[in-house]
Amino acid sequence: MAALPPLIPRIGCMILLSTDDGSRLYSKYYSPRFTAPSGPSSPDTQALRLSFEKALHKRTRGHKSEPGVSNVEGVTTVHKTMGDVKVFVGGPQGESELVLSYALDSFCDALQAILTQVDRQTILHNLELLLLLIDECIDAGMILESDPRLLADRVLMRGAGGAKEDLGDMTLGQAFNQVVGRAMSEARESMQN
Image (cartoon, rainbow, N blue to C red):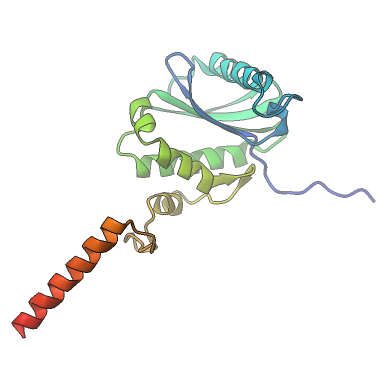
């Protein structure tokens, strides 16, 4: 009897493009389909990925605000426009559009919770938060987390109650300020007693 394929949904890529000219703001590829035989950092791979991104932009150029599903170059993609940025999640042909759409919606909702305004300029100024969000959401093409609130809390390093977690790895200045602050408050308490 032949083995059944695993039922783990796979994400092939996550791409953020400008709605104006289709230029790349950020892209992360998980599928070997987007890697040229010469290697992942070769010019051939970059040209392959750039060609795919241009095809995505061309296919979805007329879709200004509504989310959509497309099949571009054998890749099932879902997209959503947020301000002047279009976010794409792609998977292998035959991957469930509902799974891809769910991952996209989770990512976009968490991004809106993290950033006050979602547009090209804000995303570029907060690129580190975007990178953390993508890493919390998807790893090696597998969806790790899909709850937007949990994703936002993890990226902003908040605990379950929304309070900032004490991570224990402070800079020397932060540790000094904390020690001085505690000493001052203890001194005030002892003077009042």
